[in-house]
Length: 267
Image (cartoon, rainbow, N blue to C red; front, side, top):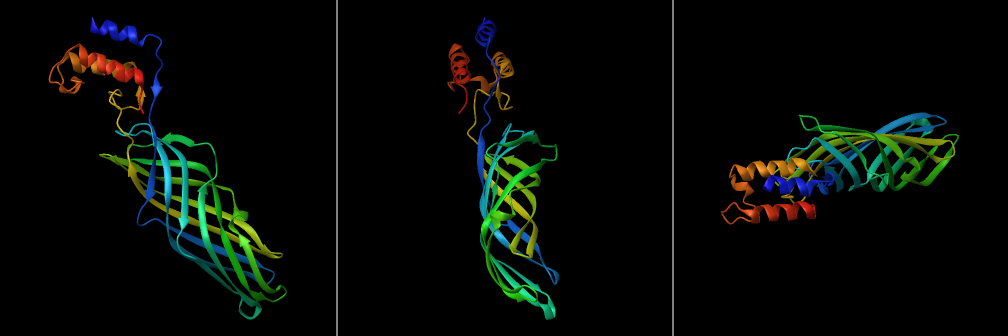
């Protein structure tokens, strides 16, 4: 009789995906490393620097019990220290640049993915749109160019597409993610002087898993017939998990409460 009631309740009911996004905070070990080449009429020179970063990344897993897919919703990363890049052309001159207030942000209004999470917890997003922002100053003197005293905007070096590879896991109610974002771009500092930059963002982040959904019986991120089937099997077997009202009895009230939760959906 109970099985018949469930089948009637499910007629015409679509499968509902309920998995939610979660925002993770960057943790210690997150950093940015930057290499830059300054091209001038007298030649090219390169320098590099690095800094810790802070910020957040928002992702969504298809299941917070055993994830098999990940969607990227957003990231906002702040470089906490000034990046100093110095270029030396010997007899022909030199240029010093400082970059302050640098940020890297997700450059699309639409989520990326989902892409698969492998058995070893790794994932790979190709062609993630990324925006840079921040202010740079360049000062110096170069033969054939003259005195340089310019301010430039990192936004002129973006947007660009970049790869994002990493790993993700869930332990208890905590989601952890680590990965790297490669980036590159170029822009003009002043007429006849261009800068090309490339680098890597190392991301380590953690945050809370979304609240559980009791009606998602098998924990696959969807509400569908298989959840009902699983509950019925547990109820028939007298599995303690099927005591949905937690009164140490197996009766119609457990069924009624499960059906109500199933019909209401998940947060």
